[in-house]
Structures are given as structure tokens and as C-alpha cells.
Amino acid sequence: MLLVLACASGARPEFVVAAQSLEEAEFAYDRGDYTQAARLFSPLAEQGVASAQFYLGLMYEKGRGVRQDHFTAIGWFRKAAAQGYAGPQNNLGLMYERGRGVRKDLVRALMWYQIAGVMLNGDEGKAALKRRDHLTSQMTAAQIEQAQEMARRCQQSQFKECD
Image (tube, rainbow, N blue to C red; front, side, top):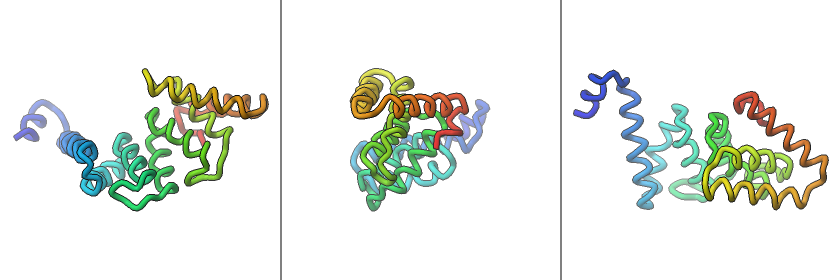
């Protein structure tokens, strides 16, 4: 019935189904049914839904409902980050800072924290900026400058030239 009403209002049926599935997947995740959440998020992530890609990245990072796999987590975070989604951009900073799924790279970590810190609001944004500031205390001026230039290029390219 919802699908018929939405179609009558001009919404495309696939968007209504995706919205319902995303909501159902998020509900499964929130209640701790990670296996079900993974089943529901996977097709949405494959279709390019950034929030589903982010959730799958989190699930692979933490081993929730799927086998823990940092390399796969990085892949999903990159796909969502490329769409301008700040949450996975922050997670990419963490993954690069800690060397999870990628070679440890403080310059790239700083780049992602810089981008996420500008885009995230509230406590999440403050946390990203705090991580950024902590990281800069361990880096040379040349490394910081390189990370800032990479962040500019990434943002100017609308997240197409970030790696």
C-alpha cells in the first residue's frame, strides 16, 4: 500500500523500497541483529547507498554480523566517503592512523580528519578535530602541509581525488 501511495505522489518505486529497506536495516542494526542488518545493507550498499556502505564498513571493521575484515571495511568506507559522507571519512582517518586494513599513514589520516572535522557537526566534528590536532603534534610541518593540500584536492574534486 505504501508503495502505491508513494508512486502516486511521483516517487520512483525503487527509492521507496530502498528507503523501507534502509530503515529496516538500521532497525536491525540498532537492536543488535547484525546478521539480518548485513543481509539488508548489502544490496543497498551495492546500489550505492552511502549510509548502507558506511554501516557495512562499521560491521566489517568490528566483525558484527560478518567476519571482521579491515580491508573490506576500508573499501566500504571509501565508497561512502567518495559521496561526501563525513562519518566514513572520519573512520578512514582512524583506519589510516592505526594501520587497519591499510598501511599506517599519518598524512592520509590527517587529511581525512581534516575533511571530516569540517563536515561533521556537534560532538562528532569536535572528536575529528581533536584527533586531527593530536595527530599534528606527532608530525612535521611538511607532513601537515602535505595533508592539508591533499584535503584541499580531495574536496575540490568533490571526493574523486582522495587516494
